Image (cartoon, rainbow, N blue to C red; front, side, top):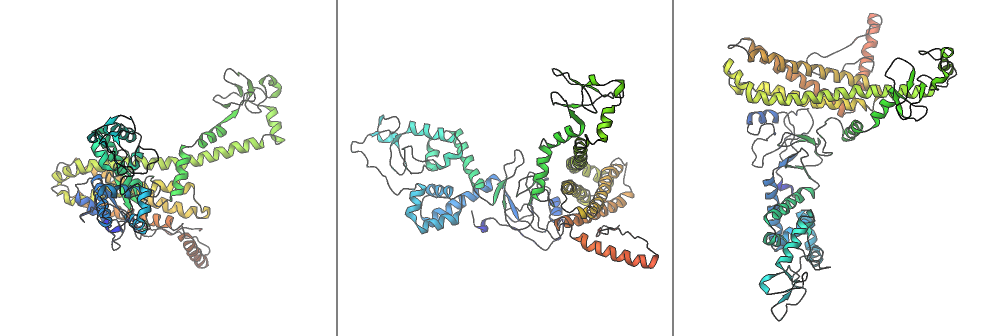
Amino acid sequence: MDSEDDLNYMESGEEDGFYSGETDDYYNESDGDEPDYGFVEEDVDDSVMIASHRSQINYIVLKEEDIRKHQKDNIGQVSMVLSITEVEASILLLHYHWSVGKVHDEWFADEERVRKTVGILEGPVIPTPDGGEFTCGICFEIFPPEEILSVACGHPFCTTCWTGYISTTINSGPGCLMLKCPEPSCPAAVGQDMFEKLASKEDKEKYYRYFIRSYVEDNKKMKWCPAPGCEHAVDFAAGTGSYDVSCLCSYSFCWNCTEEAHRPVDCDTVAQWIRKNSAESENMNWILANSKPCPKCKRPIEKNHGCMHMTCTPPCKYEFCWLCLNAWTDHGERTGGFYACNKYEAGKQEGRYDEAEKRREMAKNSLERYTHYYERWASNQTSRQKAMVDLEKARSEKLEKLSDIHGTPESQLKFITEAWLQIIECRRVLKWTYAYGYYLPYPDKKQFFEYLQGEAESGLERLHKCVEKELEVFLVAEGPSGDFNHFRTKLTGLTSITKTYFENLVKALENGLADVDTQGASSKSANSKSSKTNGGGKGKGSSKSGGSSKNVDGN
């Protein structure tokens, strides 16, 4: 298991990556064919197209049959090298978390100690009765030899008691994988042969499910895909850059934290953002910003009418003034009437309400700022999900229809699929840049960040509009149109430009917006020269070609 020769990693540093200069992460079939990206497994052309976006494949996705094959290979290897049975090899591998190297090291260092620790005994620890009959150690009934079973230790138990013992432990959970002899204090391990012989069909299925899961869950380099219902595992080559991986089920996630893929934002920022979205803190901010506590019962009250006369809900029913929070019985014409409060105005001048109002204003500002970023984060998530649906619709319906109308082979319409895949990836990146912006660690670089984000978002919206709206014209055409080639050129160009914008954005965030310092110095130098030449004019640069988008004033 710990030998990387078994993993058949495919690494390629020669191609330009989806975000250049970075490692990334797509599945490599074990036979060395083109990788499968999980969108539509049989669509080889799309897989080849996506492969051109990736600079390095640093993981493999394992199906259940792949995991079973790895298990079988590991068991066979240990059995052959140590000259023990496959049942004993399985017990050893389970104990040492499927590390073949660890098993070999421990065994050859001290075989006797390992046997005692793991429970692989070389012979019975109790003598065989002379009379030929055995007493079961659980029910204490006497049985003939053919109705008695035991593991290596020799402790006799009847088949009925063994069956009940095994069934109970299987139904108690994965602890059955490390099952010991029923005799108290006996260290002898119960191997797979006993489960195979005595467990019911249903219990066997559970046992082997625990067995296969142990191969993944006991290995630090492997994790299950967290997508609901997915039974694939990911074997990851640590220390190769990006943690983003894509399962065969099409779900992309971060191998490090198992949240959805979030490059270029780090795992700590994602964790903070998710906690904030699910926490009660924003509810409390809303309460502070939009309500006041009843002076009597202290329950928060929201003002939903224009009048300052407030009445708390039953059973309290306390009547008070919204402004000064004093009893309403103290109010009347002499206090300013129903829509004003002289007490409040006087108290405000004396500074009595400053602290409460300050807290309320801070809570309101905090809530508004969070809402700004959350709405855009959620909107891009919704757009991404819709784009994934549209991609599948394009593959299943639109490409064939376009091919029929315009007489173009479907293989020449892949530029449409490529545009949708670019949109899906860019929506994911853009979504997480709003979480990054909320926790931006460099306040002085906010302008540069928002400039790059805005350029990328603008390019993405143009691309999304083109493939979503302008394509419809050609889907309802009655025959071939000369404008279709123009559309192809436009969409291909927008896809390339959008990719470049997002490359710049991803690089900048992963570098901690370091370029802003250099750019700011260049900007100041350019402005200084411009001032001397033109009498103090202020210049602003921008990129229209999809290249570097980093000219920002004032940084």
